[in-house]
Amino acid sequence: MKRKDSNASGFPEYAMMDLPAMEKEILTWWEENNVFEKSISTRPDDKRFVFFEGPPSANGCRAFTT
Image (cartoon, rainbow, N blue to C red):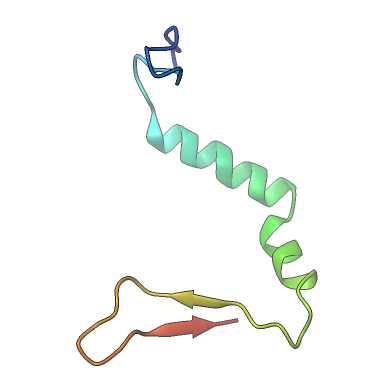
């Protein structure tokens, strides 16, 4: 990705973003650093983490727990 100089807001701009390549880089980093496994192993058993799927539906929200 080619980075341009910062714009007036102070945030960098990119001439072209290769989102699939960025996704692969991030996934590789997650795999090399065992991020998912650490997120589970460092959480106490009595502290469940809940993943909510999108906005609430007409009959309430759906939740997935790990």
